Length: 161
Image 1: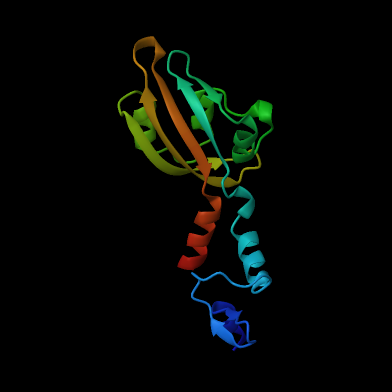
Image 2: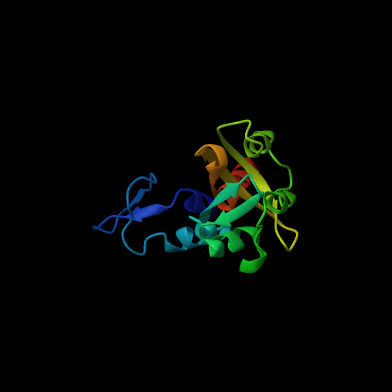
């Protein structure tokens, strides 16, 4: 019975009776607080919304980050140690996606991929990266967004278990 209660939390009605939660209706303040807190803690809530943009300059291979603090959290390094070149960035990727490589070589106009970054402590951190080329000639740049999907990957792993 306890396991069912955890799997199907109840919402309290104003008259004190209980109804099963369908997950779509908001619950009263305080109802199921422990369920929400436990779920957020195990799903990497601190990484929710963690993202930054970078600009890649193909002429010298340099990267410019829009939010160096977010990049340092994603890479798991101090702000001044965030990858400043495409080669340094690629060296942090556990298994680089072919589409990403082709995009950085200018062979694809845009790309989207998921992969794990090898952080300074050796742990992997799942990210999603999307980008595309803008400009032409010497002003051509690859603009990309990288965001943490660590929480989502943990949830998927738990569900598959």
